[in-house]
Length: 543
Image (cartoon, rainbow, N blue to C red; front, side, top):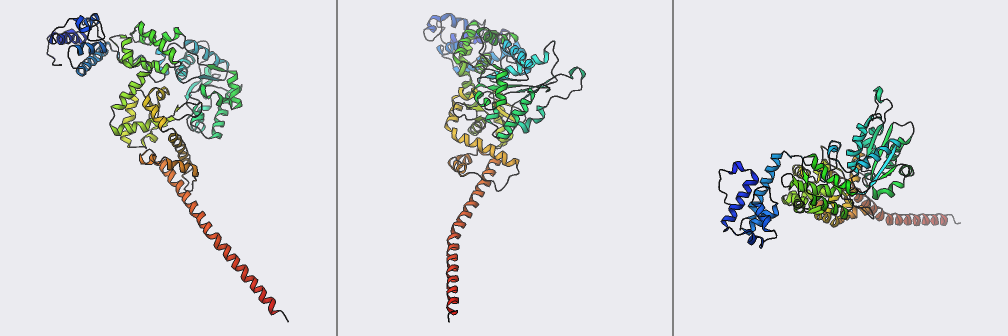
């Protein structure tokens, strides 16, 4: 921009400094009247004049229009605008966003969790009345947040009733009973005041029992262990959070169907008042203001999108990052891409900043976090281990990509596991949706392969493992899995063992096929010799 030092800059503040630079740019362009400038852009003379007044930070769109009319370099001015915006953020101390983006609300976020008070109270009342409760809702309705930031605080801080002996939260995973068996028993407490208190077990994403666990015996045993809480003498209470499109699968189990009949709560849509609270109150808790026009637009967009709370939260997070001072504006929301565009814009921005090798690693990582749906069941996210993800490529690069995706809140990450921040990402990010559609059949095979290899590992890597010819044919179709390094070492070893067994079987069959004619011929020859010998004996016996 050819910036010149000015002794007043340090005292003026970042907004006034930016305004001074804008006025200088206009002067260098020949001081065109604002009315003339307005004719060459989409903004009024008054809006352009206010941008250079220095009283508040103009939106990025207005600033770039001003700069373009005056012949400035847009890239440099955009960087300058972002520095000013960041300086305002640091000055106000607003380092922690009031919105969670795609991530769920946790217990620690309860002071920012608004709009679901009525539903949380209803759930608490039902949990106190019944020992096994089911919570059904579509993807994006906020089940996980309601359980963690709505129900758990009420259980811990309820007045006039015994406090829980313990509260446990789990997701089923691939081996629900083997993994969580210790959590399926009540807490053994010796405290006299808790002698009769119950332990609360919250099973979130219960649908993983169908999408990840394919051992029917273990699946049935896990359900029976949960339903044991229905016994009058049990000190365990169970709450199941279930995606609505798995309702029919749950009814296949008679005991679970009975529990659903007796104690089930649906996730309803927020009414306009609740939605406004979810938008405005988290910002107020951080001493921020949401522009009325933005609140109205968000309410309209959520209504059009149905259950879209993660999309709403992410759009608000991106709007917060682009806010003007302490105000979240409609202009900032539109710059972020709106309800659905915000996710695509954020994800695409992260992806395009990766180098080609990292981008390919990111593709492999994210596809391993998805289980492709079939029939009426939509695609679902899949929790996976960091070990599995690191084994598909260079460990150092995989870790770096995982951390990058986690910082962008596209995935959630802990010491051992990783998962998509929300299933909304699958449908809202066109690139990811395209990957899934392009490789849907290959992904189904890969999910089977991962599970089968894990089971093979669990029983000691039997070298004689058999893989059906159909599966081997599928692997031949998807040979690119090996070519592109998309198999873990365990998966490759499992396939190698299965193919070796298959080759031995083929060789054995060929040997048998080659031996049978020889055996037939030898048997015929032996029979002929025996017949001739019998004839000779008969001849010698004749007088």
